[in-house]
Length: 569
Image (tube, rainbow, N blue to C red):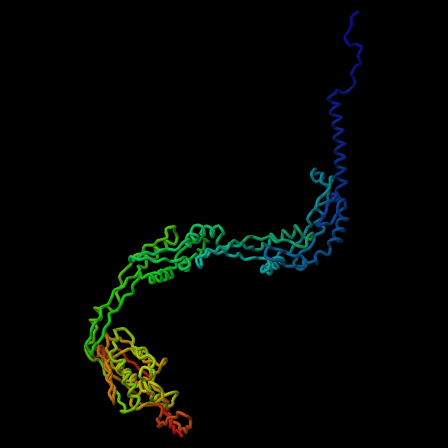
């Protein structure tokens, strides 16, 4: 008998192969899962994921309609509740409705519901939601206007820092960055925060100060600390002077440039002033001395001028500044020799060559005023006025006092005759004035008498009083002028000796604006009788000529008040 292998085993005939069965099973599983996934997606399509909140309001697992009602109920009044916009500089309250803010409930709920097969979104709905922002409608134009109006409260200008070495001490104040509210960024911040929060921090861009803190600290380290670390020694003319930081600190300039950098520099004028003051104390600088002309009678003698020593300005600025900014604290400064304005040569060349003018006035002998006239004349006679210099009668005489030998005599006080120590020297002043007038002097200051006195030329006279009524003129001739005064018992003559420059011709108008005097009866103590003299105005002038040609004309108006008729009883 022939045996056939496995002939008794069951047969697979009529059954699908194993691979086919596997594919069938897998397909059934996937179909089941797809149906379940689709069912879940359908189920969650109209529901907000559980655990979801909007502006602190829980709307999890609610349908779209339910969530809309909940949000409207809970947040419906937010548009009328004040919201604070806050910045580092300050804050401002606004009412949302008034600035164009509104809650968009539908726009808030819509993104949280709806059919989707997107796995991440569906998974989010299955496992639970999170805090979601509300959808906010913003009237950007209205909100922008509010921001602009509130910049004084919300924005902050940058505060510039400073670096100072005043008084020789370094002081540094660091700058502070400012802010400027960014309208668009602030709108985004409102959208992200409101209505869940009643305070919104605005978005702001920084406003940097011109000079950074790094720059200030750099200049402090590299320059300021060094500059005031120790005194500076100035060496010149074989001598030295020490200048403390507190003295030269005022000459240091630390003003920033437009690009925010600081380049230390010297205030040259102040630096020269500080160094010169120290140099004077140390006798480094020597002032030049003018030649001095003196006279014995009309014979001159000249005391030689002396040259001075001066610091060379460019050297001062360069070398002292270099010493201020370095550890080497010594500045070697060059000097220069300085001639005086009135040198020996000029003094000799401008000595008087002859009489250039003369004027005489007269008076009654035996009066007390004659004593004052002679004393003042003796004091002034021999005065020498170098070319270009000014003569001042008050400066030469000083205050007229009894201790100097002056006596009480007649004066004019407030338009009335009176007596005072030194009375009468207005005649000396008037005579000098006329000599100056006819020599071509530059007439600087003079005052006519209150009323006209017949012993003087109309309009050409000058009263004087200590300390405020002056007789001043400047020598504008080409040489020095010697004043010689001869006072007798009846007259005073003033001669000017110098180098003649001008031929002078006087002019005078007729009297005008005539004013009659008033009759006064006076019983006051110290009253002095007065004879009446009419008041008037008069124009006087002079014509200055050189080589027969007119080079200058001048005109002066003098106004005299009437001399009242005063009878003392």
